[in-house]
Image 1 (tube, one colour):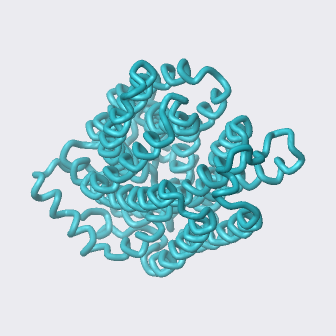
Image 2: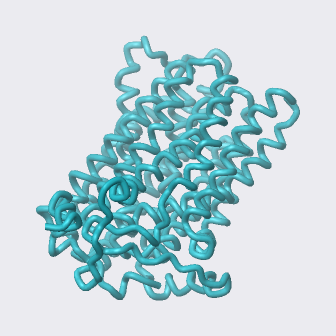
Length: 460
């Protein structure tokens, strides 16, 4: 038995109903250290560490309240700038990825995170440099669009169809360790922590140089990852419209994409930020990001990659599970939200829940369940896109749509929160949007998710 065949048997990649590349040419996978280096799990793990170093540190600094260096106003304006530019550039980021290639696009995207964190240090030295933080946020939004598009393209194209849930879980677990680490150091010296975050992001800038060229990657079932195209800019921008024309079912996922970052505002600002002491917020963040790791592994590996069940059945099981979790979490949260308002919680001397209070345990469990829901939502969204194609070029376009609409939703709700909209209004809009996202996705799941991806779905 060849190494490629053994790997298939080991990881379950030889399932007839899950192999969408039965008619594709089979290649022998490299052996020895090259086999380890060029193994898809190795490369996806390296991709996870790139995002651990960059977006993970961004999450950590955000959890520290701008590293403790930036005013609330500057921090809010910077966040709005991040998501506004990310929404704009995300729509075209797939085209950039397919022209430059995923590794160059990934490296281009990492630089913005170093600049963003460095802006907090600049404010510490020059307290009046708040506008620099906002400008750095705008630049970061453009860079983040490129990073996340390249990330989505690689993460969804490297695994076989039977392994996509597992690969998404591996990436999500490593990436969210950044939030876990950030929360763990939230009790330390903020200035020194921010310097450490800057060093880590600079390491993340150079990690893509160590990653393998996607054109040389062979999946565990012996099929080669489709060669990344490098067409002209005109041709690639035209492919945006071709993607929508040839695969219009992606439009039904757009409400789900919009909701995928929308719920962060209520969770972090209006619940965690509104009800708890700073010490409790740090522990809440730690529990939230930790639960994300387990939530992604649960739905990705044990539900969406369940080898004994057809892929269409798994798609519906995932949909039902996420839809059920939406109501469990939001019904629970509603009973808390109706007990407080923004004016009450922002008033001087307002009571804040601390980790030693008797009612803290129940409240932190809600944050844990929110972490589960978030990771399950993101994993399922990526898995659905991965079920539509295995081609990096097409998946890059889908990932660009995802990050663009995701950021547009986030920018709108951050603006509403910055305008002091009532907590209950933001909470109800979050609940309604998540429900709508799943309802709109249901017809796409029914029609578009098949037991294996057809050859004609592979390319634009």
